[in-house]
Image 1 (tube, rainbow, N blue to C red):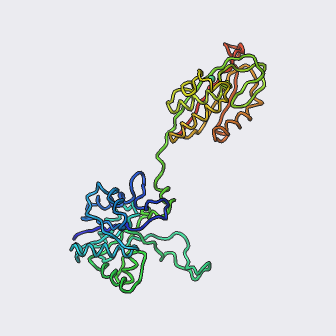
Image 2 (cartoon, rainbow, N blue to C red):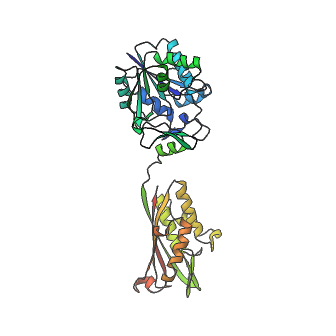
Image 3 (tube, rainbow, N blue to C red):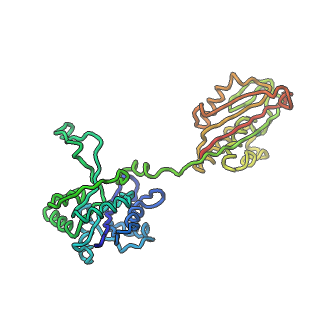
Length: 384
Ligand code: MG
């Protein structure tokens, strides 16, 4: 008994979007068709795998499947039915389609077919001539007529048919030739075999054995690579000088002094910028914006923060949480905390409940206690 797998991958497959047919689109970094072919190549009971492709996909096919030990592809036709027929005729011509041959016909865009399903089909083919995997329907099903209901269907008797579909010998080829003569078309080989009069045996299919059809199918089965959390910390101090306000978290706060600095001396944004750079291992704010560079004189510090965020984004990261602690004897921050949070929420594109701003004094101790400046600590939690 010889087992052949005929994979039908001749469709234009453009419903999923993009210029590349779906069977050649990447799924977890590899063309869909590679994964489909592997499922059969790796199965111990499958002797030969043949792929039916579109005439103008020769180059794509050669590129995608270069590493696999496969005979040359067979060129298909305009419809799936024509492609299967051309595939079977090619096998017959090569003399490999005998009465003892088990043929599995499979959609190229069903890459998740399991080894267990293939085994079940081959076992069932020992006692049936046609075996089709079928799944139950969970929704209520009716026969529609336009927008109306023509009749109700018994859900228990309605099944969804999948591939691979198994056939013994060359019965399917005869059925296909008859269908060609009579000009009838079917969406799969099981229905065509039933129409021809072959007895079709249903075996349990698998929900995971989906046919990738829409962009959603690709997204659902190609999850983004896992992210991991990284926490960065930042610290900054600015001394007071003469003036009438300070800028903290981008908010102007009236005060009897100002903060001394090359930029606007926003100590909180500097600490937060360093925290974000910390998650990336990208040095600190002074490396990216040297204080010796006159272009940053008096600059609003959100420039620095935006730069750190763009580096984070460039690495595929996202900021999940920012936590800032200010230490100062004055000004009083509490009346401004909401405005500071709102400003940060805008700058960071982060919900307010993922932003913490706390203020404390140093109980009169040290340089902060003597009212000589403001300290800011920050942590940034990012997912990379
Ligand atoms: Mg600073």
